[in-house]
Length: 432
Ligand code: MTE
Ligand code: CO
Image (cartoon, rainbow, N blue to C red; front, side, top):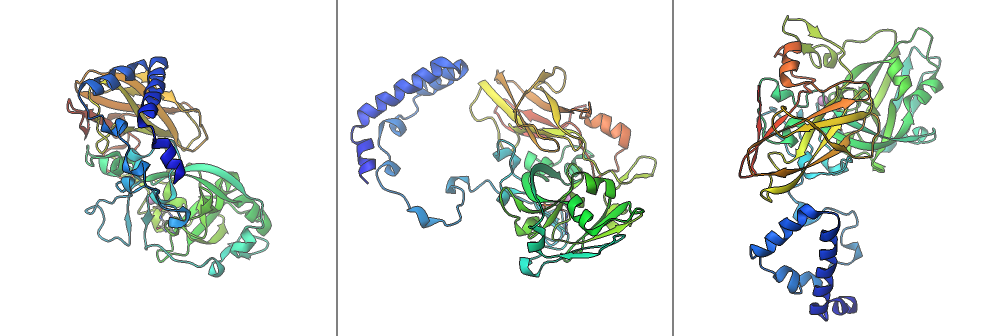
């Protein structure tokens, strides 16, 4: 209590001290902001917020144990996963979306990772969970969760993108918000055992070439994965961002298949069968293939192509500050490796400028970009275009359609356009 009293006993002195510090900062690095801030003062914004001692500065708040498991501020109540009611018939086999417009950096907080289930969320006690490896192996094995944690483990950060992300946009601009157009993606640091070590323990036979991963949920989701990928960088993960996987993400254990379509990342992983050919399950025949204009289907399109989206401004995050200095921001990723460059355009792709890439750059992980510009209050058409370290360039939607036709649902990595109106409001549009 005395701490609070001392801080506020001489509001006049502390106010002048604060203003002095603020003026120094403005005079230094961010010249463009100074105009905006003094404009705010001249516009007559009531000054009580800085001159008066506020309630929270006088009354102590909750003690340390008010929230044994911390939750976000009540003022962040809008930052939640959201679904699109008309998109699926039943919440048991449905999807919700990560609020990309409300996040910064590259980590998706656990409670905001989008969910995609085909048979609801299985609730499994770790003590009752088993993972079996069998088929073309010398020693069929069954692991408990305790067994798994006695193998050497690694920490790695990867994005998971559902192949259906942006799927509603194939035939034109549809959903109004990057949460809905691009929010079937999350980026998490996983702790897990390299799948390679478990396969070595079982002893894979020389003629083995494929594995089948199966979930313990009511959908018993199954996917064929080439052995080469399993031995390369797949993880059997039990932690996300340092804590146990959330039930929605496959607690107690899920498969991590870096850079490849989300459907292959089997949650509640219970069985891995080793074989010499793919199984052609439902999720790799009727689903997750791309029907081309000539009636043929692309199958096994595992790698998620290079892609990006501007998260701010975007329809759910309009420009609120009016004309002047503005900063746009977004996310870029590639299932092939690292993002090398992101170009941004504010005039619908006529002129491009290289965005500032955040230094955190991991392969098959999200990369944050920023771009500062002066907004004169005229209409803008914002676009971003990502390029990865192997030279893959994100295509326009027109390029994508001319190559793949318009029958597809999956694997839409086309360039997104946001129209910014004079009011600062933003809309999902397409320009040709
Ligand atoms: N694994 C199981 N067992 N059951 C499922 O329904 N859905 C898949 C995949 N793994 C699914 C599953 C799909 S289509 C995607 S996009 C990802 O999990 C979604 O992972 P998330 O819920 O962690 O976002
Ligand atoms: Co999916």
